[in-house]
Image (cartoon, rainbow, N blue to C red):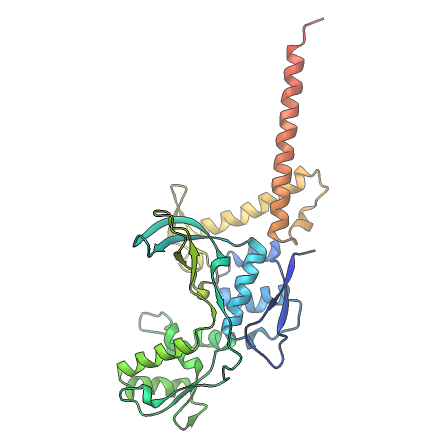
Length: 332
């Protein structure tokens, strides 16, 4: 059976249990998510329905709960060790670049206070010039997904303006305009709100919704050895993001000193997983089938690889020792 655990959701829902049971990602799904171009779609339509035992409409999860589940699922399936490329230290005022293993368990998760209202408000008195109250709520992951596909938020450089889009997802009312549309909100931002008030609005909303996973974790500084150094672990990255999900297939990356395209790197990962599975099956002399392994979590596969690698080394040592004894015997 797959490894599983229960996790407590951060938000309260009418039709979603407060506690969910999640299982580790299976090998066949690992093949999907290491190469899928749309992580969000994959998680909502394929991975979460498989790993969550309860019947849940995942699109109605608040974004902070979606990120929380992804973080817990990552640790359950692959452990808490994560590779980061930069560490920031306030003690020695240095930023160290390279590849460093850090612990995702050091990333704090801030709970939502019980008295937090469903609809929050930024008073007009907070602004310099704008003269209307603005009401907002936490966005669901379904709303975020729709926003990422909305042409309104695509800039001239064809990149989604996720910060602006998220803000529009959250706002429910401006002044007496109830159920205001994204287009109307954008029109107000562009034509009726000065830049300083827009920055004030963003800062206040960020402060009032500072719940869920933090953006940094704690680790040891490679230089001064301070234990209060930090690394970036943005919830939006979900700790799964691979380079080829962010770039086109024809771009290259250096792997062990060799330039390879992202397509080649992805293909190599697929082949490594298949080779590892076949190795386990053969080393066990077919006692463990490849078909069964492809439905198991990575922890199971890792356990068998370590076990059979050790066993093969012992077999090889035994064969060599037996050969040496035969060669050392005198002829009769």
